[in-house]
Length: 213
Image (cartoon, rainbow, N blue to C red; front, top):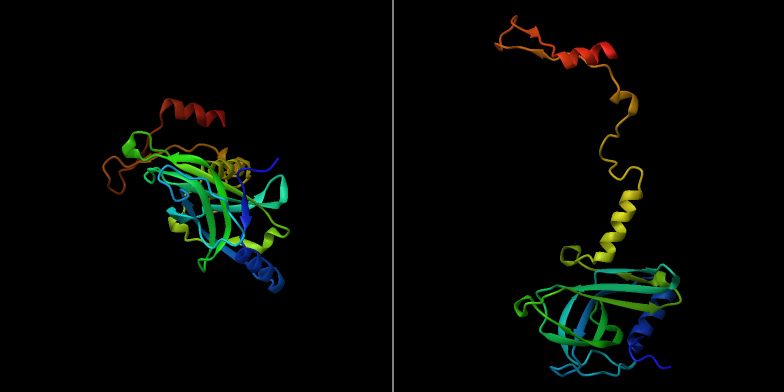
């Protein structure tokens, strides 16, 4: 059965991918464009290898993440979050572009309406694209971290890794068990805040702790 929704490398994309692999360089994918196929109500498109741009752009932004698929090391996954304040258009197409502005990948997307907050149902949209590449190491993500949003899936993954790490905060000293069990010493209080007037004040519960150590 033919895939109704798909993504393909353009001729430019394939040429740049092959050139990067031959020279041992990286193909830097940086941005994504979202379009409606040239119709306000969203029109289907037919992406072709010879395309140099999507039909009609409705939004352009940074790609949020790029990583290998956990179940197939020949698949490369790109993730993009469209903020909730962006919208009032249909999504039927997308394109991935490199840092030089060339269309590397073009795709056909299931017709989806992107609302805004003003419409009373604003929500962030998550665009996930899976690419099949012989050598996934050739492609890398190049973006400005200051303008990138993290997807919820990415955040959940990072929190999971954080919780499983034995020492997730190496900049802080670890609590050492034998230091936490040091004997208790009474607090010295200078009631009048003058030299020679200090005295030791021991509460009953402090005394009990002292004699139990």
